[in-house]
Amino acid sequence: MKNIARMALEPGMVIGADILTKSGELLIADGTKVDPNVINKLTRHRIILVPIKEEVDFAKTHFEKVRLSKGFTDFEEAYLSSMPLYKEMMNQLVHEGIPFRTFKLMYLYHNVFNRVEPKDLLIDYLYSMTPTEDDLTYAHCFNSALIAGLFASWLSLSKEDTDKLVQCAFIYDVGKLKLPNELIWKAGKLTDIEFEKIKTHTILGFQMIQDMPLDPAILKATLTHHERYDGTGYPSRLHDKQIDIFSRYIAIIDAYEAMTAVRTYRQAKTPFEIIEIFENDAQKYDLDILDPILRNLAAHTIGLNIQLSDDQIVEIVMINKNLLTRPTVKTKKGDLIDLAERIDLDIIGIY
Image 1 (cartoon, rainbow, N blue to C red):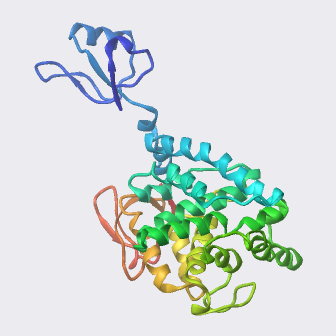
Image 2: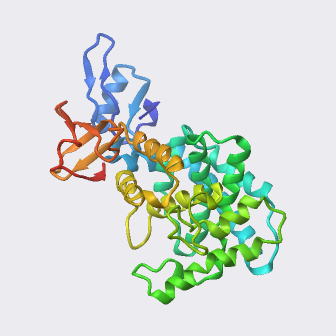
Image 3: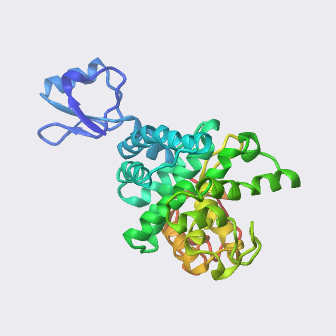
């Protein structure tokens, strides 16, 4: 809602709040459409400023409101102006062998990340971004760098380690730029041969940057971000603490970004779907890193409206620390439902 001068009113605008006379009587009700009669009333009562609904006031869902917010508009502007610069740096590396400068990557990171306040809103902002098919790999890494900054704050990393993690995230999947887009982002199930081809991106990426004067963590993250804590990853089937800690961070960031990004062939997953997938695959990740991230993801949903499997729209009011995917919710009537006890109800979407 915004206040505009009465003289700027146009037919079809919608009044944003009750307008009262000087004696306190209702003159024009909230939600009234502006027409000549409304303007005449306001003129007779010498109303100078008029509350008018904006586009965001008509948004029904959480993400519609996010996309129409000024914060998202500022973020999107910075993101879209920074992405071409990042693409140019990566294309010069991949196609011409021209090394990138990490301080330039950090400039792009701060230019976008600093537009987000509070920082948790990054989750919603990235959820609302839809890259073109040609930009998917670039966006995946760029988004991962932004997510790295958020997760680093949740993990209380030092500034030095935060910067290092952000740099790892910008670069770790650069090897995919050597592979066909239609293979990397294939919608259906990969054949065994296709999967073996995709797995080469870790080595391709490492080979591109191995002679650059980079922090060893960046080199390791590029080569080993698909290693898994239980030894089931690639390329070397490392396990536990054999995997560098920054590679362990990136493994989680990589999986998270892949699940939250919108694709032409599927919608992004909800926070609760993501938490459940991570919990089911917990043996693959370092739990000392994963647990605080999942708890923060769950906490971010407090205050959101969700749709339940019985079609109720309810508000999340409390997170169950022992069962993150089953929060306590409040109905429109004010009744509380503990989803940990109501196993007959499921969360089917963010509303």
